[in-house]
Image 1 (cartoon, rainbow, N blue to C red):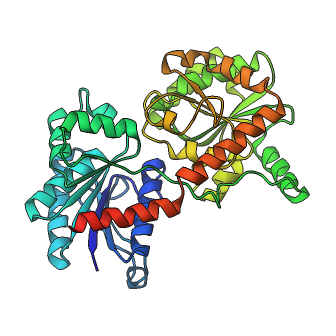
Image 2 (image 1 turned 90 degrees about the vertical axis):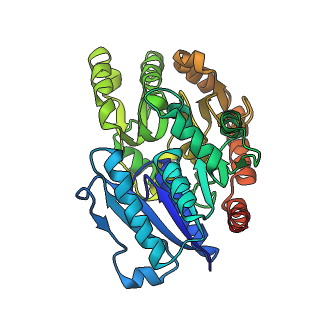
Image 3 (image 1 turned 180 degrees about the horizontal axis):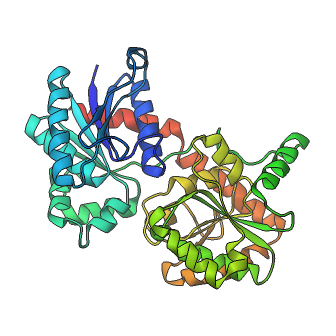
Length: 395
């Protein structure tokens, strides 16, 4: 049996697409008879503390073993300490490969450790890791070294793959490995009396008024996700008709001041921002997505957002920016609507134009969006591609 060390900065129950994809991939790897040790960092442990898998019963199941390491204040202490743990784990049960999920720190650490141990490495490039690390204060030299030295590189979109190839001039090329969604869990709302009653109750529990248009966003709201444009769009739409902004997730703590400033300028609109908080259960996320009249993804830069794929699988009509791999998912006017990044200040106008469409036009987009996700982003396809990746990693 192959044994893989999987390094990721975030892992469930952490929030965000990185944690979600890491959890999904390691579960599937275990189903493929790959023994997986997950190494991740935690701000909730003492510096240097290691939290091993909790019980022998959990270790024996077909689940990844998760080692959580307490962060020091700086990476120059955290990474050497983590390498010591990796050395110890490798002595106990040698690894046949190392997977770094995100360019830095995970990808760099995976590549460096693999070079030292003479085993293959795989680095998964997600989007934000490349787009931001290119520029100060990012470490360009470390980024480039990682891309050149890793045995295998995967990218979630053709856009990211092209950037990786341009930066590294890799002869081995870059493997396209997009995100996937369980379309059996993320489904459109079935119109029957039971679901209608449940939807009404959920709206009431959230404090959504009957006449309000629901503008949706899912995930951790922050600057790169177009927070300012979402808020401006809410104010624009509300100047024409009742509306609320449903944030299915959280607002990053460092961005709370943006909400406060918006509240001073637009107190009425700010009062109609509804934040659910982190929803750990995907079924709950799906239930909230089904409430949305339109889903918004005005990202400034992006890989291939899980939240957008989930919304499309739920049959949401989506308006998104043309950042990163989003145009590889949304065909304007067919599977959703694209707004150029230079025109995101017009998001409110785009929403009003969408709301003016006929029900038949909206249903057509909704069905096409779900069909695209089912055809191109299914867990079955991901499992097959994982088999191929593990085979390549072992050769």
